[in-house]
Image (cartoon, rainbow, N blue to C red; front, side, top):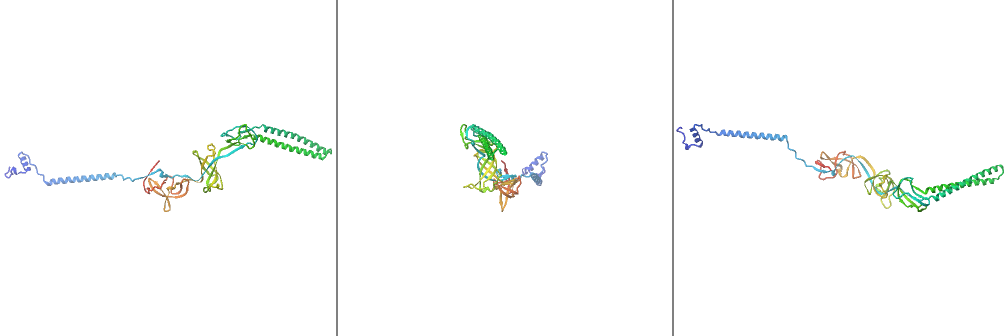
Length: 404
């Protein structure tokens, strides 16, 4: 070791370690200069920065390729009852009438021939056809009257033959001067009187035949027996009520309409009639007659309405409510009156197009039954219109239609 070597107690730890390594024949450790350490640190920091920049670029590229979803705009819920889809429809203006129903034909038959009732072939509620025998009065007395009239007529016919023969002989004798003109006049008078008597006898025969035919009451039309007063064995005089027959195939509704509405009524207008006690069915009727004056003490006009009752569902005395169609508009576009809004005199509605509320200006026509207003311009079939004045709804709002 050179003389200048430091004593071991004066050496630093690194110098003592190197001296030990030299004694052991090993190379001493080299001292790492500070600037080398600084360079290594700089390189590490640079690599870290570059890596962070590359990671940021990668994240930015991924974000650009997969942008996050836009925040969902809240939608407003529209119930199905708050909107309607426009479609062409038949519009009608109607006048309401009410009244009782009665058969068009209702006839009470009375006896036209006196006598004892022999038989009654029907009871109340029985259906009969035209020509069916209903009541038979005993015809013995009437038959005797007819036979007597025929006998008297035959006897008078014989007398007329004799009188005509006598007139022929007298006429011949007068021509030969064997008889007087007064005898001829007498023969002529006798012939004329006998002829008149025969004519009267023939009238008696026809009367007896008619009385005999009246002893049998037959149905003049198809119908139903409504009442029965005649009973077998009872004596009836001419004019005694026997029974009532009604024709139920056609009913007459004797209705009343308000005077203010009567100006819209006219014969042949169609009427939809609902009847108390018969649910789920509407009967078709037709205006037959309209009274020109109101009923005394009321402000109603009597109206006669004919209703077909071929199936016999309706009964006399039922109460009906009719809607008379006074005007029609087929294939029209109409919306509820509540759907129409106004802005500075312009009518408009709110429509839903692609789930967005839009304003649509419209031109309106007349108002119809059911609080419907006809739209002549601005709407088409398939448009969905908001039908209620929803205060929280505005143009541009996104909506969802809740069906059902």
